Image 1 (cartoon, rainbow, N blue to C red):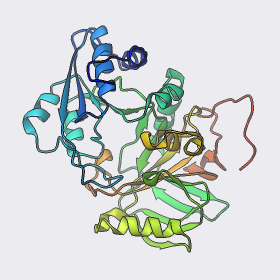
Image 2 (cartoon, helix red, strand yellow; image 1 turned 30 degrees about the vertical axis):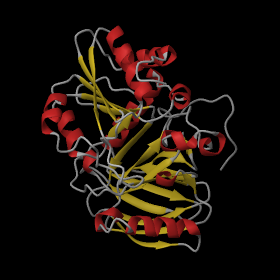
Image 3 (tube, rainbow, N blue to C red; image 1 turned 180 degrees about the vertical axis):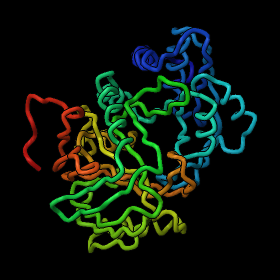
Image 4 (tube, rainbow, N blue to C red; image 1 turned 90 degrees about the vertical axis):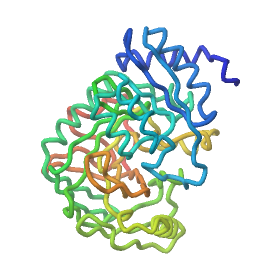
Length: 355
């Protein structure tokens, strides 16, 4: 598709999304991309924003091709102060580059800019398209998590880890940004926070079917992580998965890569755990099905600047886990991979078999 071609199905899709984002007449909307990446999205987003009366424009730069997979907080807009100053004066920025975990994104949010990240192809955007019902449940989850002071995660496979809470804020992702300074990812559907510095301790047992998101890979063998004072101090396992995780994190040559990052749970019942196996377009796709699927406990390693911390390591590893139980101050939220809290669960016609 050439840069001058507009896919009108995409225009309609983005029109509905931008309406959820409350894009209105006279607003300044910037669309960021790198090189020719996402050129069809750029054209469709420009057209959709203009149909809502916004003044939309595209800013593009060249991407650094040397960055490895899952590197976070490093992007081609870094150091371009004139451009960044302009973006901070916009009402909304649509990110097709990957600003997440960067100081520049945080500066835009502090200036009141709404930021929407889009990294998935159209089939995923449509299948996981956000709803106000999802947003309501996710926001209720955020409120409940904000009040908690201890999170305890267990599984019948041996996971037993405790997070002391309260030092960091709670973030929600439901797929659209409708408030000044809010960042979100289209699509998504989960809630998360960060354990207090030095106050995450226990054992995490990763099992077959859990996901190493940076590799778009289901684990095939057990990996046991020992966590002490907020850092992974031991990675055990005899299979390739343990070797992958151990050597990948070590490859950043940064002790902060072993820090425990955000923690939360997935709430999007339209997301699919098995998506990596079912799709034929995995090389084009991001990992939002994996991060968002209903009842997963989203464990992670690496940076915490997104939540106001000072760890900006380039290494980030999301690991959605199945079959876990999660409590907040003793109140059950997730039981064996299923959300059981009455204000957060989805009533389904057919419940899946017990994990």
